[in-house]
Image 1 (spheres, rainbow, N blue to C red):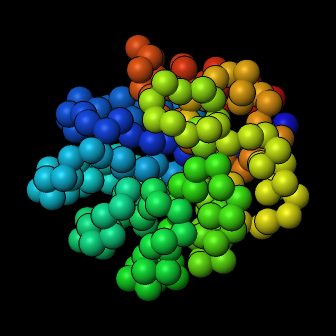
Image 2 (cartoon, one colour; image 1 turned 90 degrees about the vertical axis):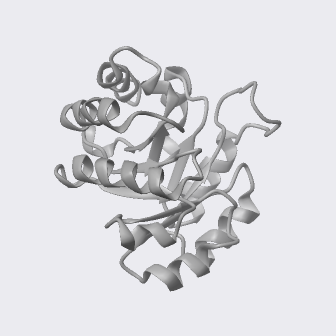
Length: 205
């Protein structure tokens, strides 16, 4: 049943033209129910990040979809975003929560570490991401195993997100043990991202 499916979390590309990407993002949000978007930019230019954040916020908030930004706590309130996503486990969760308050979304990527995930949850994370799920030629990280998600979903109440090198087969396998799937390049590299995401959603059933 659709209501039992994991929720969808979108990750933006690391670099893109905001004017070109906005309609692409809007088409995906209009086609599917999306829980959250992560603005994940490689740029360290504060002006550029802010400009893109404003453009993406307009698209997301017009459709009642939350928008969080990777790492840049100081830009959350300045640009009317919904929270922050950290990429270094539990280290900054308490800081992010203190800076942004209880209503903000604060989450973190914890690799394949059960210990790091538990620490993040105890520090106040709203969700914990584990990954990569599939094999990737980038980096040296070992994939986060199905067993980790199965244990987490049985024992821990903090929502868990599966991300990284996802395939339709892996989505089918992990759907029963994860709360959210985070899709980035898996959909944006396709000519029709909305259709690509639709295929992933179908494979959850």
